[in-house]
Length: 171
Image 1: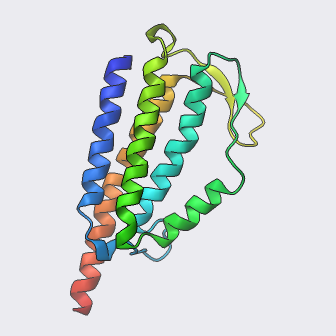
Image 2: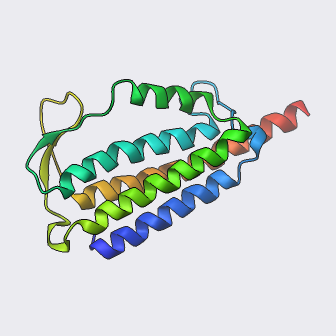
């Protein structure tokens, strides 16, 4: 996707995600459907970790280097998963949204520095402990982040409907 269009769509996808999360009442933020790995409010810490991870990838791509292996701080992903499972308390929502906004802006700022002629240039990236590299461009990273935001929009709506249905059944 052309760089300007990719950045604009990244912003739109964030707005869709934030709107979906904004529809959740405070008392639903800790709702966890049996068998799920994210409570409704857990989408915030999960999205924030994904933004952190791919911001690091984008930073490396922006530096113009050759192939590399991703590295996240030890335990960071596991901590984010625990928070996603637990959901949020109402007083935690605003801090998560502030963090999401800051991380989103950081990705945009890094992406803005990448010359248009390198936007779709792929570099071999080894994700985690993978034995094989996955050729990755800045456009790929922004595409994954857009898709990630949008993946959780219907999930949030579905979980919210289930939460409301459960409250109506017990109310």
